[in-house]
Length: 292
Ligand SMILES: Nc1nc2c(ncn2[C@@H]2O[C@H](COP(=O)(O)OP(=O)(O)OP(=O)(O)O)[C@@H](O)[C@H]2O)c(=O)[nH]1
Ligand SMILES: [Mg+2]
Ligand SMILES: [Zn+2]
Image 1 (cartoon, rainbow, N blue to C red):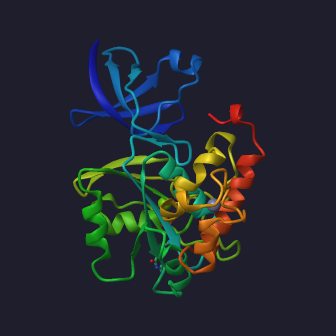
Image 2: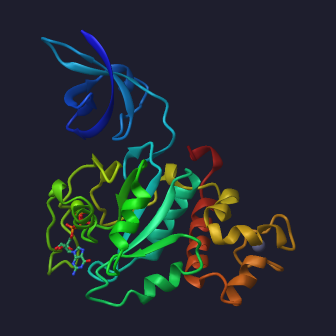
């Protein structure tokens, strides 16, 4: 039996695939993780035991820099949120929830707009123009090179609705991956979950994780950001936060709120602010102790 260090690149049906010194080992997680309710995640740095005659095991998960429940990945630097102009249409409440969660976990959110060749990108661009978040139009020249340079030496995960074109984009960034992609269903107007599980690849001088898209994105209690920390997760709000009349301002319509004023003045997107209010309300309906 030999102990080795590696990184989890994929998990399927209770098996974890761990890359260590250019070899991929199929491993089972030790029972201790199940007992302590820790699920190994793609992106985890782990110690494994490689056994000649029996199963290899994941023995230890090294401490995580951060992790996400959806997509289930760890140790992420960048989260690329792919938003398609159409088929599927953008859902800004969903994208703002994902972005806020990334900010909360110290992950850099980046927006990539797909399908600009078939429908106008202006609605998406408008929402994020003053957000302080990098927005990359995939239909523009140089976009692939720009994205690729942001991924160098980093771990980047891709997320977005099923069918937005995450795998298509990854194939453009790294054609050797040759990931499966599929047209969205004409009848349902949504993707078919072509990508089935999160998988980590070494490309663009870093690691990338392709993930299955979602078709609905329900609130999970452990994904709710405490309401008093939420405003910081909308980065364009930060410069106004100390200016509100009341230090207890919820920024949802309170008297003398500088954020509401910035929305009226067109300095902050109305849609972003409405989504902030929705997330704030959801966080208000939950007890602090329920938030992990
Ligand atoms: N016209 C156009 N089609 C695109 C673009 N990006 C992706 N598509 C198409 O959209 C469909 C879905 O793309 P995928 O890459 O499979 O989408 P995905 O986000 O990986 O989907 P899941 O794996 O199900 O989460 C495919 O038919 C792609 O060819 C784009 O920028 N323009
Ligand atoms: Mg895919
Ligand atoms: Zn305020």
